[in-house]
Image 1 (spheres, rainbow, N blue to C red):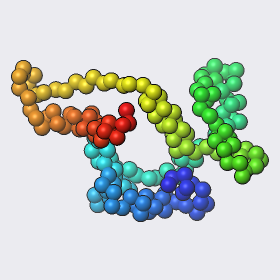
Image 2: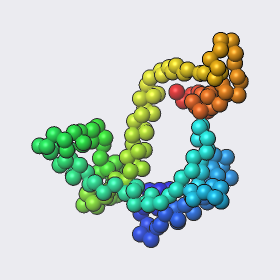
Image 3: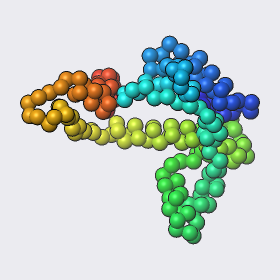
Image 4: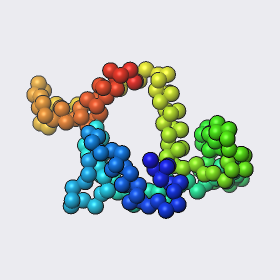
Length: 179
């Protein structure tokens, strides 16, 4: 939704929030914030409700760095500047994504910018590929009580830690076959 909203010239943060509300209405993980809050919407994550304020999201999503500029900066003779952009070779550029769209001409592609959310999606897909290729194992430390007494277990404390660590949230994903 954020990328779609960025392409409209008269779009504002409030029009984006309206689209999010319309799209997410009735979903169990979405909530409108408390009237005392200045947040625009809330999402229930494994650690609890997280409030989001969409102030300047559209502006922040548009990545002003053209692929040519990034390549130029990554090849900089200044080592500090070069190190800032050293990982750009491993991330395919927007033009390589646009090559899949055969209906567009190369002249149009040169002027298109990669948004932050598009880059995030690319990185997430790459991460999911790595996760599918591995067998991750995690060790989680759970504090059984605040008194540090052996043999004493406080069930609400343990349950809260499991929820905050994402252990309980992870079971539906494991059952679905996602690592």
